[in-house]
Image 1 (cartoon, rainbow, N blue to C red):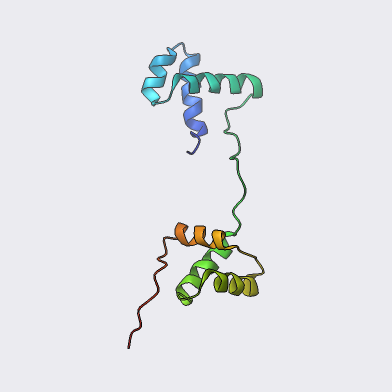
Image 2 (cartoon, rainbow, N blue to C red; image 1 turned 135 degrees about the vertical axis):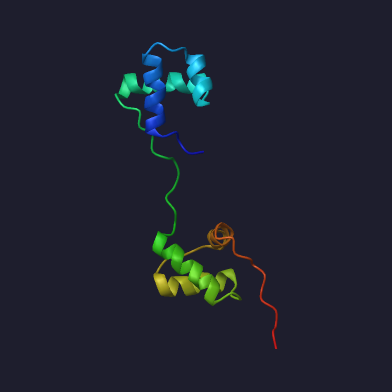
Length: 119
């Protein structure tokens, strides 16, 4: 789930600063009252309302490599994951595992079905 925008956070805290009730503000902006308390605490302790950086590992492929991988899927639809990993390594110098390829194929909504033998 993405963090709420800084603009919304500022509108919420401004409403509270103007003396409005937390429950009323929570209902108006469709957030949980606990979220409002966290925003107030964040502003008090750190002096800003910016969302924290997202956790997790950075994507294995850069946007340019993602485009190249997508192009490879279109150009070579019958390759196995192992063959695809070898070709991608030869072309881009990035080692991809089978599960990584599987995730990217799924993320790109590409069908794994092989094309039929057309005459």
